[in-house]
Image (tube, rainbow, N blue to C red):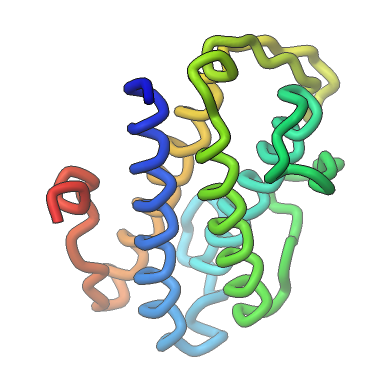
Length: 176
């Protein structure tokens, strides 16, 4: 197993586990508290959670067509993105179910990534119709980096509400 494979498998597990911890904490908030516009880029905690899920599903859809023969992505269709704020789930309960399913899919998908796949090139059309081309390993790294970035926004919002999200460092997670 190559370094990228090992790293991405670790990131996938961290993503799943930290999402579960975060969703448990957020589940204790009222629906109004989750959906209150707090001035974040996607407005609210719910809006930011929705964006993370939406983008994950967009990227998985792109991978399903750009990197063929991945069994875990069979049946995953590209999403027609109209907005980065496009609503995936209106309720926190539905968002939680979709998040868990998507995290499980990411775990399965990352297990299939080989050195040959990661060394390849991914070509896809973005939401503006531009054709983009990047090394597969770079796009996978982007998927995980983007998740971490937006979860950091959520932990800030939770801190502003007086809730401690706990230790968020990947290094600490990886050492446990």
